[in-house]
Image (cartoon, rainbow, N blue to C red; front, side, top):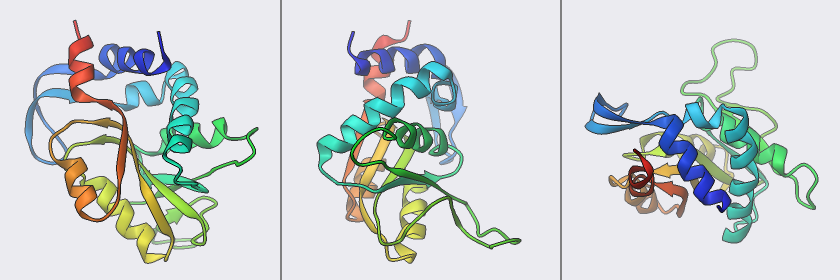
Amino acid sequence: MSDHDILISLLATKSARRGNFVLSSGRASTLYIDARLTTMSAEGLALIGPLALSVLRQTQWNVDEVGGLTLGADPISYAIAYASTHTDRPVQAFSVRKQVKQHGTQRRIEGPFDPAGTVAIIEDVITTGGSALQAIAAVRETGAHIAGVLALVDREEGGREAIEGAGVPVVALARAAEILARMS
């Protein structure tokens, strides 16, 4: 099995559930994908980091930094940064807070973020695109160049189109249809 096939199987067995759910977007759905059950697992981190790094390199976005809205993007971003450690072009990870921190440095973007770098926004699951668009707005405020969005899962419900409508290309490691096809 390819790494992509293994990822789809992990998402189908660990993260996907059928039932009646209300998503963070407020939409009702019969499919819930709790990506963190995969992205925070040891096997998920070990698989996602190199796979996502490979996909990023294939896009030729030449990113220096990866990150997105906390909490969903965090383990994916960290896995990518770790996977890049011994390459000729290491990638730094950062997190975007939902709100500016009210104490200490009062930052919205945490980690070794450099606005002079080229950024890929990371998203765990795209439904409406709202979380990625929030992260895009925060990063754009710094003047950084956003090359694109890398999502773990595209639910195929219009989020990709919303992000691309904001002028940012999207690649996804998995689609909801692929995950549904593997669920028992």
